[in-house]
Amino acid sequence: MYNINAVALNLHDHNTYDGKTHNQRSRHTRFKYNLPYHVDAYRDHPTETKINVNDYRLNDEFIKEYFKHEEGKVLAFTYTQGGIKKSKDELFKTILKYNQKILSYKPKKLWDYYFNDDVYYIDHHQSHAAYAFLLSGYAQSDILAIDGIGAEFRAIFVDKDKNIIDLSKKLPLGWLWNQMSKITGFGPLGAGKLMGLVGYGKYSDYYKEVLDFIFEDPNLEKSNKLHTLVNVEKYGKEDLAFTLQKFTLDKIKEIIYPLKTCNSICLSGGVAYNGYMNEMFTEHYDNVFVPPAVGDEGQALGTYMHADFMLNNRYHKPDTFAGTDYVIYPEMLSGLKYRKCELDEVAREIANGKIVGWYQGRSESGNRALGNRSILADPRNPNIKDIINHTIKKREDFRPFAPAVLEEYYKEYFDTKSDSPYMSRIVKVISDKIPGVTHVDKTARIQTVNKDFNKKFYNLIMEFNKITGIPMLLNTSFNCKEPIVETPEHAIRTFKKTALDILVINDWIIRK
Image 1 (cartoon, helix red, strand yellow):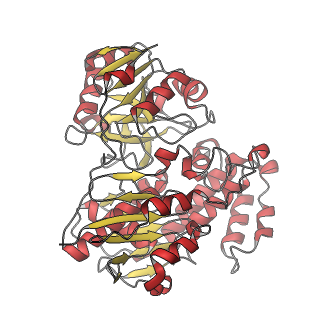
Image 2 (image 1 turned 30 degrees about the vertical axis):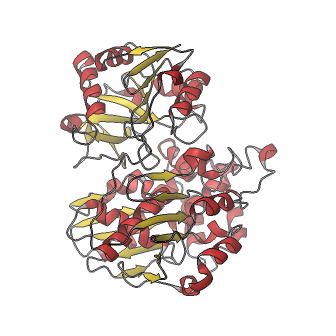
């Protein structure tokens, strides 16, 4: 039996996984994407560009600490092309010394791999695809792994027989979103922000023509002059966002739908954070699965699972909450007003308008707070979005918040066919009782919660339902201009510097 340690050396979301603990590096560096805040949004913040977006200097520290070939262990890894710009020498000295073939490795099937001298390597998109498929539990499935950039691919489709179809030239949607995000001032890693504007825009024939022109150019990445055609000052960011979203869905229908080989599909890669796209797939497939750490922050998980499956013949399924379980000592709370509390007390406070920082046990993998590192509030409050954006998250006021709804009630409030445990789909809202989590286009990115998934979070929502008759809470990630909080110290610091009313750490309730 092989002892495996998995490492993902990516463009930004470096992470490791040893079969128990998922170490997402940005949670510890406190730099989102491992880059200082706003370093990539150079158009809106020209004074903060001393560090170039292409200078991934934190990679060196990461490699020295984690990218080790330990005796008696298999080092399973993957990487992103841009992610080793400043670390190539170190990488060659350690891993590639006897493994030069890695640089020319290109898989034809999902289960292909390179293995030599206890070094196990798979392609970036293989890692995405393996993570989604093995976690889904499906006996067979199509897989779409689509990203901004990888190693050998930008997008792949894997059929039910696990053949890889390279769609990098046909479907570079991740690249396109990153470019449009950069043009609109959100930076090359701000596609999620641009998606938040979709509901505010309308279809534009002008933008559609420009997107077609860019997408069909054979020198796609080198023809930057084409980007000058994207005139956001004249035609607006909102209409660009709406048209880009429709363009994305149309391309998926045109290119992916005809490739269908079975009734299930798994979606992965950064583009699979597009909740509109994920919901659309439910119209074409009976079963649609999107894992929690769908972007590069889940690469170490997928790499470990692939290696364990092929070398040890095991189906390893990481826990959604795979972060470190920190011990909470009373002295950590020194100087704070705290005491033990019950769930009904927290639910009453939220019902009375309080905004709560909710910190429980091990952190969730991925960029969605799923009930262990969350900010919670009353979804009935029509002003709650503006309050949280302005006084706590301190981010753009157009960005919406998600509802965490008890699984047995979601069809009473949302028009969708199936549950969404990882907050991965954007669906239509059919109730006027929850304005705080209803986006301007009458949609919401829902999280469905059952007792097996997160018992304590489920019980808290149930208590809120008993008080208000609404079986859901507003749920957003516990952070302020930083990655999601990881440690109790991070939670306390964020509580102190924001307008959060209450902090709950495990069973302790803390007030200002």
